[in-house]
Image (cartoon, rainbow, N blue to C red; front, side, top):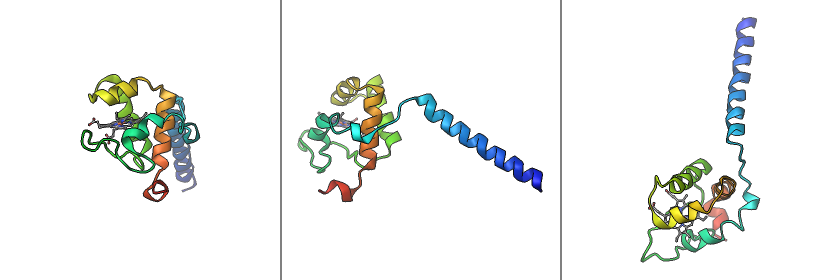
Length: 118
Ligand code: HEC
C-alpha cells in the first residue's frame, strides 16, 4: 500500500516534470502586458477590444478574443509557414517573432466578452 502510493507520487512528479519540460522547450512565454503595442495592427481587422470588424463587406474576420492561446499561436505560426493561406494574415504573421506571437496569443486568450465590451 505504502509502496504503491509512493509510486503514484513519483509518477505525478514525473508527469509534471514532463509538462514543465515542454513549456521550457518552447522557451517563449507569452506576456499579455507586452501585447498592446503589438496588436495595434490587429485591431483594425479583428476589432478587438470592441469586436468591430474593420471591413465587414470585404473580410469575414474571425473573432480571436477569448480563443485559447495555443489555438491563436498555432494559427499564427501556420500563416507564417504558409500552411494557412490568407494573404493578409500570412503577411502579418511573417512580421511576428515567436515572442510576439506568444504575447499576442496570451493577450487575446485573456479576453472575455465582459472585458472586451468596454
Ligand atoms: C488586414 C486585416 C487583418 C489584420 C490586420 C489582422 N488580421 Fe488576423 N485575420 C484576418 C482574416 C480575414 C482572417 C481569416 C483568414 C482566413 O480565413 O484564413 C484572420 C485570421 C486570424 C487568425 C485565425 C483565427 C481562426 O479562428 O482561425 C488569427 C489567430 C489572427 N488572424 C490573428 C491576428 C493577429 C494577432 C493580428 C495582429 C498581429 C491580426 N490577425 C491582424 C484579418 C486580419
